[in-house]
Length: 483
Image 1 (cartoon, one colour):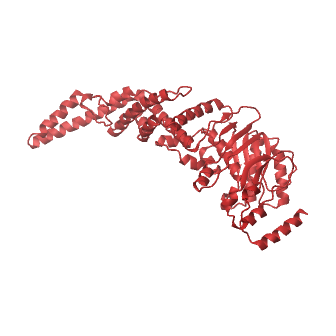
Image 2: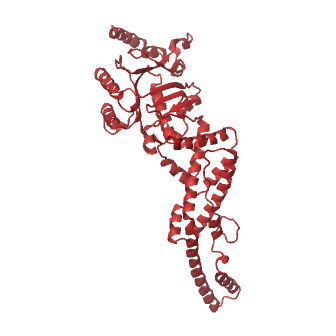
Image 3: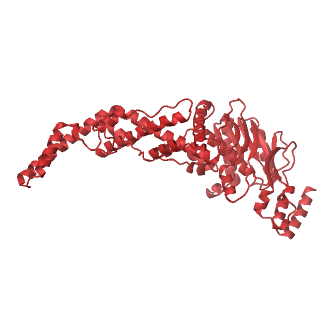
């Protein structure tokens, strides 16, 4: 999967990526090309996650002095990879030589800071430091001043120094015509010498181009790594255990959706994290309206994508496998905007997913209210058939539905839902949506029978003060339907 497509399809991912406090353009570019760690790459991913975890621990303990200094250095780095290419051609001017000198000095500072950081923070295996660019600096800094400035120094060529001195001497004389002509000739000769020096400098710097490119890559890597650590500390993300069994299994304690959690808590509302375990094959997921089914599916998709793009995950504890793909099917307005019906677009996308599964592509598949936009009889038939198919395909799948009862021999989970005891005997006509939310228990529990989904819609409508006459009539219709 690509970061760009995942941001479009996985709720909350784009927001979290925007929260990354990246300092450099190359760091932002590296983020946009972040690799998707797939099955078989657990060792590489674990190494990355352990580094983020170690840096996060530093941040949480308040030891951020070196990290903050590194961030300031990264903010000064310009993307001069085009200049590196020009060095190989020998086609550089004073501005580009200044860029190389300034960058090389910044890298030297970053290398010293990283050495200090690695003394305070045990990273295993020990990462390579920035390359040594001291020889490149010496080429561009013949006076050893270590100043972020550049011009063609006199030290590069004694003849150039002589001609420049002569120009200064002539400048002190009366501006006779002969003096002006002599000065112009000397200036042309200086310009020719300076051009030769630039060519020579490019030639002398050419052996260090690979080191310069490597240094730029390391700036991008550490900029992104440190930003991930700060994000992990801000949202309390954790290091998961990577599961490598042939039959994949997901297990969470305290899974949460960081964006939804933040929004609710900013409004003073309660957020309930979820404990959950999913196994290979299909799982049927039910629950009443407002019971958080969609948020849970989005939380699972977000956590998995964060992991496989090299981030820690939103939970207290997690055991997670790696998948080739993560697919989240949630209804939105995009299909209508493309001129497709909701049902037609859903079936089209689901068909592509099923074909990929049949070809052996393993995935985490999360489907919200499958076939809900068609008539209940056909919709229920589609749910049953899809569940049967998923049982024999390489996936961990969770399918939510309001249809029921569903007779398939699959694992069943249900959101516990509305808790009558939490109403405290209050006046039901005074309940608002936030009060109802406080009365919900979002815990996920096992459902052992093929029962109908919980019927709490009329109860909730009554609590928010819906029209009493309409509700009474609805209850009569509901009673007849049950009969």
